[in-house]
Image (tube, rainbow, N blue to C red; front, side):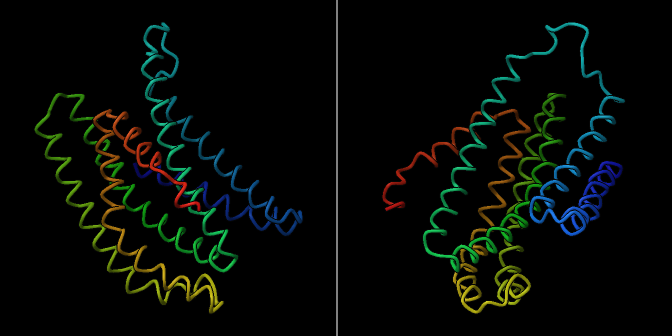
Length: 237
């Protein structure tokens, strides 16, 4: 596991090195930052693919072992979930943009903080997902049940800690993002929402990990899609 962390860090370091080169030396600006990010991601992907090829046979001798039907089914369910999540974020950004540049700037700061804390919950979810998948593969259902309960408890605890931390620190930490008083005022309005939703957010990510570990992709996809299918006309109007 430590070696994989090193590979991810190596990609991030490459991104940091290439950013000023493309942005300032080659004068590509934001496009240069995007190019640097893509190159770093390709570097990480190539390294991880190379390590994976050393451990498993990516091309089985017979096509019947590929189980393409199951992969396509699960891939479609995950695609449906991603589309639902993307739709919600896009709708939120659209509503914020309609309120003006100040609201949009405050929204982006709150969103980035929310995404950063989500990665902490996602890390816990991925750990639980791996343990659950291993337990189900061994038909050790008691361990699977115990793991699901424990990661949900830890997720709730993490959410409560993040809620208190953000509620206390974000009002001061917002100055790291901007000095504009109007934006800071809008951020202060959003702090209770960002902090208060952390327990729900953490549990949602952990539940995703539990469902993925149990290969229950359908529930994650349909539950997210059903939430996004709620009437949005009143919100948009």
